[in-house]
Image (cartoon, rainbow, N blue to C red):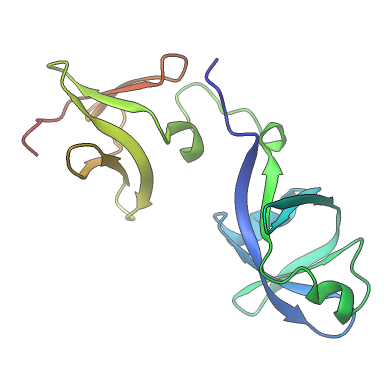
Length: 169
């Protein structure tokens, strides 16, 4: 099985809410409320990680607010401002056959039908119509993530993604 990241970044602490230790959370999950489905969180500040439990959380206005077990007042909460929020990789549910987490695709080498290496997956974009692979290599390429027509095969063990894509695009 491929080496997977130990932690998956889900968001960051972006502000304070009230005086009882609640925090504003900027979530990278979709929908944003899904960040509250995971506890404990791993918080990173200045390269140092700590594990915290989420006591409460809810949607608020256009964002998320949460209270952590260790955060009882504004002073405790303010120490966490700017912290990245991650979870351990094993907290994610297993995906069914043919479904993938974006994080699993990042770093895969992309090869077309002719055996030409087009680059490595740097990140993905959500466009509405379909997701798009952003490749870095001798130049940046954007390839639609459409299974069985553009994306032919994903081999996580070999870290290879095969596509039906012209090298000149």
